[in-house]
Amino acid sequence: MGRPRLFGSSSQSALGPVHRPAPPPPPPLQPRDNLCPLSLSDDLSAVAKMALSRLGCCWGGLHGGLLGVGPVTVPASCLRRVLRAPEPAPAWRALRHPACCLSTKTNPKALLAAVISQFKYANGKYESFLERTFPRFYLLYSTFLKGFRTLFSEAKEIRRIKLNMSLQKIDFHQLPYREMERLRQFRRDLIKAIPIGLLSLPPFANYFVFLLMYLFPRQLLIRHFWTPKQQSEFLNIYHGMRREVYPELIDGLEQVTRFVADQQLRSQMQELCTQVQSGSHPEVEKLVAVRSLFTGHPLGLQRLRVWQVKALSRILFLTPHLPIFFLRYRLRSHMLELQHLDRAMLKLGVSELTEEEVKMACYVRGLNSTHLSPSECQKWLKQWVKLSCELKDSEVSLLAHSMVLMSTNYLGAKE
Image 1: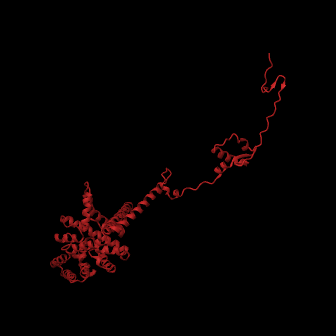
Image 2 (image 1 turned 30 degrees about the vertical axis):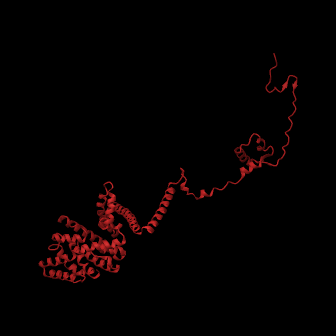
Image 3 (image 1 turned 180 degrees about the vertical axis):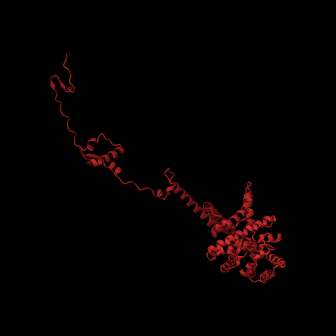
């Protein structure tokens, strides 16, 4: 049997170890013009490895150099391409808005802001074109646009007021003056706008409604969509309509007081009517002195004749073409509403109101304030508030007649 073969004895024979010649050393590398020697340290080995692997260099041939065995020669063109500074981005990329890049990481708010800014810019260009080319149409366009914005802001304010009323559990007459007046005016505007909304419901009827609003702005549009010129003109027209019943009401008061049993009250009331007809402004004390005539017979709200109730309804811009019991109810509710407004105004102070608020308050209470100065309107309004706050809720008939008695003198002097 043969001798067992030991592990690792393949290089030995039976006669003894075999000596093989050592391989010759590799020839030294000759430097070339396009090669530059570079000794890479341990810190740069990983960087060189990634760079050379991206360039497709053979890692096996450089293994010895990267391990620090010897110098490594890398083509200079490769190193310049790897180690060169990054090129700057093109100029046209800097001009682009970041929100224009359609990416999943784009901020939606930034994109929305960019769209809104572009829309505002285009809208400004369009408005300037209309103002230069079609000035009359631009006036109507800007009025409607401003009206819609004002109406939308008022609707938001009304919603806030209603929410506060429900949370705090307060009534209408407990609100401050400005909030109370805003609610009152918004309710009247809403009642006027309801028929226009109903007419616009059928298909293609909105074009006909737009034509009607253009032809009859006073009857169909609310105050937000009137131009400043139209607002002054329409207020004068409306006041002229209620001014027609002023002489009729004063004559009616004079005729009714003839049948008053109390001679002192009868003489005071007749003197008051004569003073107003002659153009003098009545004093608040004289009006308060005859207050007992307006609580029951003959000038109480429930004792007034039909024509008197209809005339007072026209003064408050209420339709007179309704049943008499409904007219009395509406007249009483509107006068109580004005009385609550006057009490809130007294708490705020008449001097705290703006000129526009003072003029509008005078107009609502029967005085045409379009031709009066702010100081005259403020003086008249203080007298009215003094009278209104002295009267009780059962004496609203006197307050309604005072709209005529206290306004006639100003009408005769200024118009």
